[in-house]
Length: 118
Image (cartoon, rainbow, N blue to C red; front, side, top):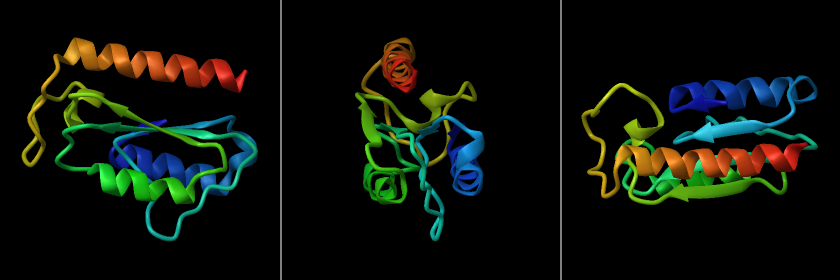
C-alpha cells in the first residue's frame, strides 16, 4: 500500500514481485509510466474527489496498468492530504467533507477490499 509517491513505489514493487504480495492499495497514486502490474489479485485504487495533485483523470488512467478486476473508488469531498496526516499541501484542492468523514470512507473501502482478498 502507498499514498502519492509511496503508491508509485508500491506499484513498482508489486510489478516486479507480484508473487510476494497478496494485493495492492493505491491512495491518490498510480503506477509510473511503463509500469504494469500483472497479478492474480485485483488492486484497489482510491482517488480524492478534489485532489489537486493526483487528479481523478490521472488516477483513472493508471487503472489500465493494474490487474484485471481492480477497483477505483472515489472518496467524496476529499483532497490529496486526507490520505495522510501532514496537513494542507500547496496545489491541493479544497475539501467539501471533514477529514473524519473522508477517513470513514477510506476505511470502508479498504475493509471491503481486504475482505474480498481473503
